[in-house]
Length: 238
Figure 1 (cartoon, one colour):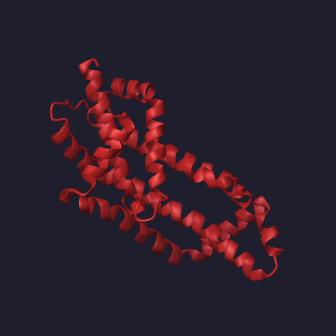
Figure 2: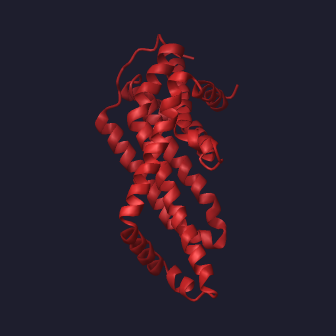
């Protein structure tokens, strides 16, 4: 089986194990609750930032000139949601990467790769730097391409942004406990297209209703299976 599909199939298999069910639920709930609280508390501030951004891009003048005015209000509400929803998913992915991944790695490694020695090539500082870089690039991609939504071209940009974020964020976590720093660098380079392919496949799940609720943990599991399988093959010389 194709390694990407094999990792994804194993991730789906693991998803509904009893020990994983709570890990599936709480990152998304925590992210949603966090942004609901922030949205209510700082709605005026956030709206002001968005309006200023629209004005800088020339979108606000176009919206102000629309008739009837309720059309402009609907478009503004949609644009607000286009910013709010990604922030919820990004937050859920970060919570999963920082807090849930260690438990997921232990579960997968102890059952499927018990012979794999832990080299601890990653670090907390490396994980934080990697996550911050991934988030910054993701936000830049999202913000720079937001005007393209007005022309329809922007419809493909969320998939590109999600693909980048997933592969950048989770490939490091998947190998940080078991791989040495040299092994991690080699596997990142050797399977670069596969990491991106897995990032695209798991990124698509974020846009599928119901499945997107499981997307953060499913993404983590898929990257763990893919990364540890490639690491095991590397050490076996295959």
